[in-house]
Image 1 (tube, rainbow, N blue to C red):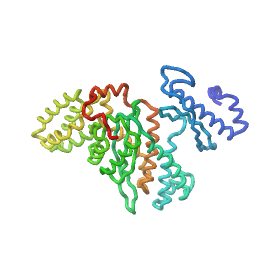
Image 2 (image 1 turned 180 degrees about the vertical axis):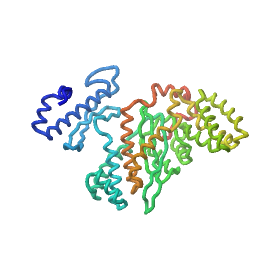
Image 3 (image 1 turned 45 degrees about the horizontal axis):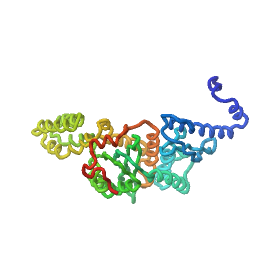
Image 4 (image 1 turned 30 degrees about the vertical axis):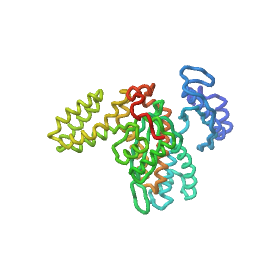
Length: 407
């Protein structure tokens, strides 16, 4: 045995393992998990039980029982809870939900008769046995309950909200159709990102975005100081209907890409892209407006369509200048959502065509739930210390109806 390992493992544990074998290992693994999770909670809170420290960020709130299946048997674990903050121990393998959903999506293809021999082989390798329709239904029901709880949980105050959608291929009525997966990310008052909601809809038409935003509102989404999204007519109309007085910043990355479409010559595209970057990198709104005037003069003869488009659209990407400068880098684009799309597609590519919308929503929900928990226990995304006072410097009390949202 490794001498260092022998020093770290108590002799009574080794003796118990030798004497009782696998059953003893199951009990020891159970104890190690529970101790590790309690240690993680202390680290997360910045204080031990009953300890008073200046760094304490919350309080213990008991335990929640959970049973998990392992190769050595069923473990009975006690998940430490935290009052008022979201905490989930890294000791547990949080990837199990998304992997289970991936296996289930492939298994559904097999059960519904849309699979090939290769898919059958993959299913058996992943699941370890042939999956019956009854087994798939039972696993799906258990998983769906957990994921529905995640998607419908109560929300609260989120100063920044990002909105976007991507498409997945789903089999409907004997045909393969593209289905829009609508998503909302938010930065909470502690400066941490969260997945606020997702939904599978036929398209990004206004009626679907309005239903999605209305659901977020019913779940308690409030305190929104800024929406960030691409320029999509259905989304814009729905946002105005549900949250009419909340400012909006059009994603500067997409705005710059849209601008390049108005170049008459191929060699003008990089020049237009640089002109857009110069405007967006300006130190203030006043400087950005001044640069816009220079860009208009520079391109009014060689790219008049671009100039006309710029004067109609640029203002939508300058809302960022009305907020604290320390926020700008995080609120000027929806690049965070684009990275999330790539991660989702990396997982859904294995399935290819989903047998139905519920299957697509199940897998994507599991992937996002896993990422959501990583964000909550990870680094701060945006420093919002004293954010209300910072925002009020730009939007004083009584300035229009900006502070009011739909009741």
